[in-house]
Amino acid sequence: MTQAPILEIRGVSKAFGPVKALSDVRFELRRGEIHALCGENGAGKSTLMNILAGVLQPSDGEIHLDGKRVTIPSPAAAQRLGIGLVHQEIALCPDATVAENIYMAAINARRAPLMNFQKLYVEAQKVMDRLAPIPVRTRVADLSISNQQLVEIAKALTLDCKVLMLDEPTAALTESEAQRLFSIVRGLQQRGISVVYISHRMAEIFSLCDRVTVFRDGQYVATDRIADVSPDDVVRKMVGREITQLYPDKLAEAPGRVLLSVKGLSDSDCFSNVDLVLRAGEILGIGGLIGAGRSEIAQTICGLRPATAGRVEIDGKPQRIRNYSDAVKAGLVYLSEDRKGSGVFLDMPISVNISALDLSKVTSLGMLNRRAEDRQASELTKRLGVRMSGIGAAVSTLSGGNQQKVAIAKQLSVDPRVILMDEPTRGIDVGAKVEIHRLLRQLAAKGVGVVVISSELPELIGLCDRVMVVREGRIAGELDAEALGEEAIMRLASGVKNPSTQQAAHVA
Image (cartoon, rainbow, N blue to C red; front, side, top):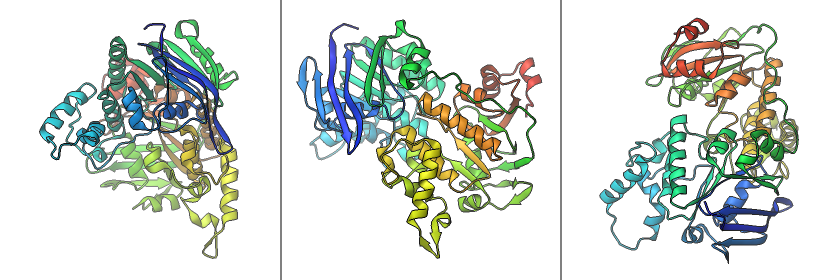
């Protein structure tokens, strides 16, 4: 890293109608530097990255690259200047192959009438293998969310970048995939490429980055060398207040009646013979490695995937759940890990999103009652603390964390008896995480059954009263609050046992 800046942002502002996303911010990126950009959801981080990538145009301010003032009117112009962006939200063509997505920009720029697909596949596989052995002839739509994220990163690696911006690049990755990405980022740094790294994960920032800049409420707060600050310092600057407790107090008394009982549940290919019990007042966690079958189990319980065996009971009553509509009627809802794909309707208003799960609550004599819909949306967005210009705003205008709150509000609109949450805080800042964790505990205290699937071990340990661990489609074991720990969870998830774990866990 050299002291000479390759990129300077001076006094940049951006407004969306009455909402100011950025106000007179500054940012400096040095050559060969990995520079973290932190802030709560809605702080303006992604807005600035989209300005640098040519997706948005600033309302005011200057951008200097290599000491020269530049304008970036389009994504193509950004690429020509040597600026690449890996978006937080996956932006691939689902019906195209991995190889076609990786080289989409090159394909669009070429003039030859015929494409040498064999060469394309060979070159794309070389790039893909640096991250993961994903066959590049595969359709993107057939990949998991984590593998789609790896394709996004592989696509950026093909660009001849001076500046590479990574927006929450590890949100959907396993630990091994994330470590492979870190190795690649360090390699890019050694080649003189400058990296802007956006993440809410402090451990990543403090192990990978040289400096950190904090934004809050669309304004610049501070820039520090990583060696000069602590994670707590960064969090305080992000939220503007002291966060004394990341997780709410756990259940202090014995849980109540059985709310949800799943016995012998199996599907055709992902999991088999799953038993699960959730009691009133507790939060049940489901852990395990990505690909172990966690999401598939939850989706099958809710009728989103067909079951081949097993039964589901709610409050002791057997349920015939043939599809998701049956699940909602039974009081069972599911929050998808794929916020953009199946969590919210991005181009529709917040109020319409929230009412979409059950229109009967906002209809009268078969007609939609807009006032009732708006009243419902106002109550739930206030309860969840959604930052917005109004309930009529499109969900796409919200930050990622506020989009997630709208997705949760949609589930709560039907007054569920049991809610299954798949990665409920993925890509959300520490302040919003605290709010959602407290909300889940409040729901559990009021008698709503809460199941949380999470890849973040601290979240499972800090939030849940009990954790079931899934390995290769089967329940590998169950850990109560006293036995919960990262090592215990990982031993069950990976199949490595020791005597203490076997005593603490009920191993299947």
